[in-house]
Length: 327
Image (tube, rainbow, N blue to C red):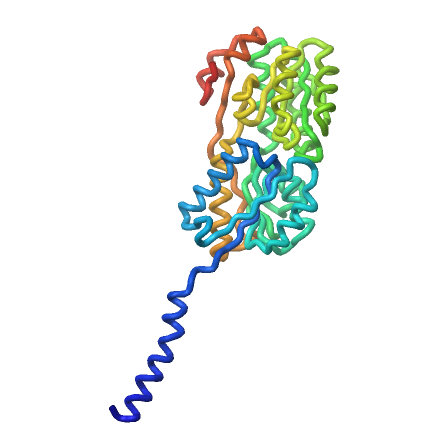
C-alpha cells in the first residue's frame, strides 16, 4: 500500500470512529421529579402514578432504562422542604400534584420545567399568565373551571329537593378555595341554596365544623378538590352518614368509600395528559409555549346503598347519567 493511500484510510477511519462511538454510547437517563400531595401508601395516588408511568412508556420512556422518577410525598403541609429537596436532585422536569405543590416548587425555581395537575386556578395562583400561553416555567392540566360548582350544587338539589343550606368544605391552604367560593356564591341563590363557607385544616376541624353545621336541618355538603379533605375522606364520609347529610364530591373514590355521589374529571386521564407534556418537555419543548390542557373525560358516580341509608331516592336522570353506580 502506498503511503498516501494509508494516510487517507487512516484519516477516514479516525473520522468515523467518533460517530461509531457516539452511536454505541448508552442513552442519557433523564430525571423526572414528582411532588405528590398525598401519603406514600395512598392507593388512589398509587393508581394515578401507575397511569402516569404507563403513558410515559407509550411515548418511549421506561423507568430504569432511559428515565429515572424521583418521588416525594407531602401528606401534610411540608411542601417547602420537599420541593427544595426534589429540586436538589436536578430533575429535567417535575410533575407537581396540586396547587400547594406547584406553588412550593415555583418559589424554589423559576427555571426548572414544571407540569402541574389537580390545579384549578393557575392564573389566580400566579403560575401562568394565560391558559393559551403560560409564559413561564409552568404548564399543565387544568382540573376544574369554577363553573363546575353549578353542576355540583344542581346535583345536590336534584337528589335532595328540600335542601336549603350547603357547606363548602375545604382547606384554603391546600386548594384554590376562593376560586370555588366566589362561583358558588353566584350560583347558589338561583337554586334556593344558602352557601356556608366552611374552612378546615385538620381532622378535628372537619369534625367540629360538620357537627356544628348539622345542628340545623336541610343541609348538605360540597367537597371541592382539596388535599386535606382527600386525606381525611374516610372521616368525612362517616360524618356525612352519621348526620344524614347528602354530599357531593369531586372525585369518584369518595363514592367508592361510601360517599353519596360525585362528578369530576377522570384522574387517570389527567395524569395521562400530564405525561404527554412531560414527554414533550424532555424532547425540547418549553413550558412557556405549551397551552394549559383541560380534561377530556368526566365521570358521574352514585352510591345507591348510601342514598337508601339517607332516605333519598335517586332521580332517574341522575342514574342514567351515572358512569358508575355502586349498589
